[in-house]
Amino acid sequence: MGHQRGSGSQFRCPDGLIVRDAGISNMVQVLSGLIENGEFTHILQRLDD
Image (cartoon, rainbow, N blue to C red; front, side, top):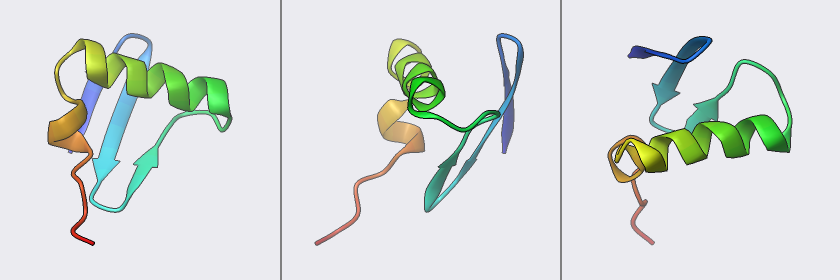
């Protein structure tokens, strides 16, 4: 599922995080946006041990 956020689209998949540009700072920006929008636990779900 794609969502428009800021300057581009972000997509989610059940076993990974896809960001427009590689790098830690870009991943942090996406994760921060998920937290700020209350989507973090909806998008990234904890796996059973």
